[in-house]
Image (tube, rainbow, N blue to C red; front, side, top):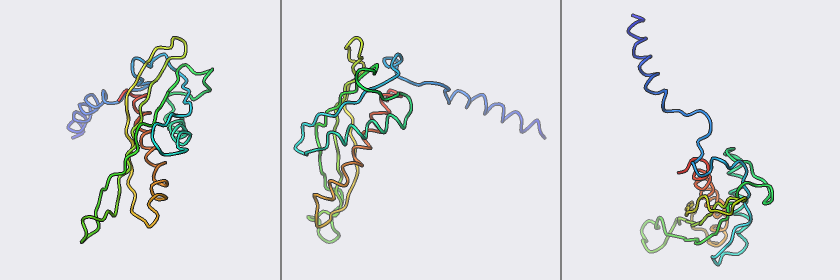
Length: 168
């Protein structure tokens, strides 16, 4: 009876044992990088005073992930330059009985990034990430959008940190 249970358990352990990797899973181009610096983001949108909020979201997420330490620009192995390219508000749900009026919006932010090695100046990684969140229509739509902005930045920071630490 125990032999019947041991054989499937042994097979499962052998098959599933390769699914988990111990240790670092950094992308090959980031293997030598231990510390990152995240300066204040550039902003090419018309939304004022969001540059520091975006950089802060990225720093918090990198610290939470733990793959890289965050340090000042002069002490970091690489610098993550980010540019806020676009903030887009898309209608997501309409009011029941009135398809023209919107009851919920989707806020999408587009961020370009470049990771530059401090010592050589070569670009290790570059690309674009998107972050999104939804918010409901209120009498003060601008305030509702401003309150949703940190959530969209946080979502983009999660995606960026995933690319930096895992490569995807």
